Length: 482
Image 1 (cartoon, rainbow, N blue to C red):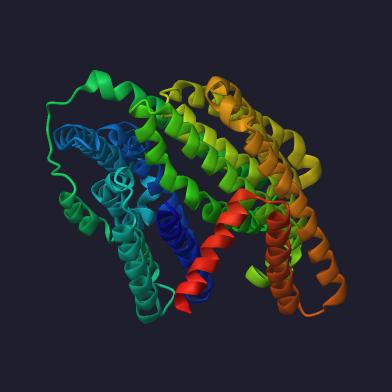
Image 2: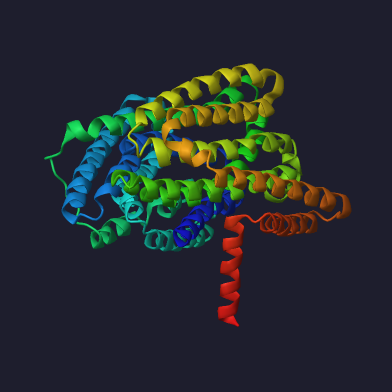
């Protein structure tokens, strides 16, 4: 699990680093209108990618994990699910082409939209859910890394003038889904997938559509923040908020890598009715993320100013307070995700996930209209924190019968207490570094390094099982090398 978490983390880092490396370059090379066409076309296609996906990836992992040890059943299941995915993809293309014919004001964007539309087919062909079911992340991670590096090289070689926004769009598609055709071919080493019309629609369609509705609801409430902020305030406010959100999403993406690789394992154990093992893995996930999410969030809050200055620049300093507020949402969103994807969906309670997500979406939109007029981008951040906290509580209540033995276990509560004590040490270290060091880079480096040492030392002194296990593993590695 640790290797898979590392590989998935590497993939997440690359997905986050790619726009951070490319955007500063293209924003200087391309014209403002070129960037505008590129962004609009990418956003427009995302709706059709969502439509073609139908939430099938989540459903396939949940159901497929139960059959992975039975070659005949997993092939039959995967063939049916892939066929549904392809039908949804064809429908998405029909609706896309119809929209391009109906809405004449899209004429300026047609070329760029058509380039981005390759993402729809290639995302379906990628069948990454097969690799997730079999917990094999090495192949897709290595391919992703190679294609990202090639894309960065192509960017610097081919994007040279303001009119090259179509080339940039093609490179973006190549970076994002270029390796998916190889993924589809390589997936045959696990199972043989084919297209079929002999599909059990009644069995598959209802849970798929419920999960899809949840994904749509999440998309609406995630996108509503920026949309409402732009309507009530201005582009400057959106720019400031976008900076804090980008940093927030980077931290969230890295921490969620561990969670992503454990979902198929938990779905498999639940499907096999191995509840004792399921509770053991779930407890390990909660405790591991507990000692990682809390210190990472506290550290980001303490170093928000330094992070903004390093990743953005002085002109984005107003986003510091917004980042400090929204960082709290990392804690709530990660634990909400544990509950929804590791408990509710494997337990086939996706209807409750949909209900909770819809309530949260409405709550978030209302809060934005209330808080933005007086607090601007800080109000948007606060509404996100409240919404994530609400959905965490609702999701937890929806599966209280399952998680109660895990959450209120003595080891889990002890782990949480030790992590909070360790976070106090991080606050002290960051305050001392801020007081004693003037250099931005040195202050940041010393704050991070000393915080890690302080946090680790506190956990070890308090006898934290996970910290002691990691320490023992580190000692063994050192002994082997010596």
